[in-house]
Length: 98
Image (cartoon, rainbow, N blue to C red; front, side, top):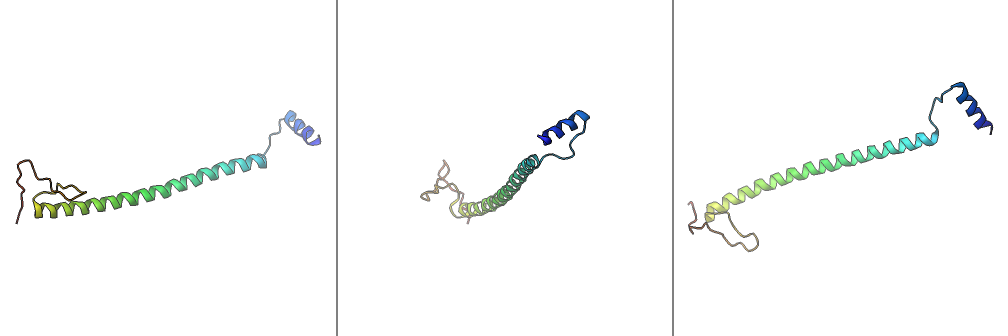
């Protein structure tokens, strides 16, 4: 009871505490640490996302090169990717360039 009495006396005299309690400090530190970890995780994911987007760009360039080869060889790059069937233009003529 002496602790509570001393606290009440300080309150009546207008004395304000200089620090928060250890429990409150631990609670705040834990919340901030959780935020920092989440932000770090987001940074890691964003880096992975950037790398994957770059890989997709490289693969799209590769597809573009393959399409050019198909157009040169068959006159079109419009194919069924499941069975390789060539889908020629409506007029039935491919622009095969030798």
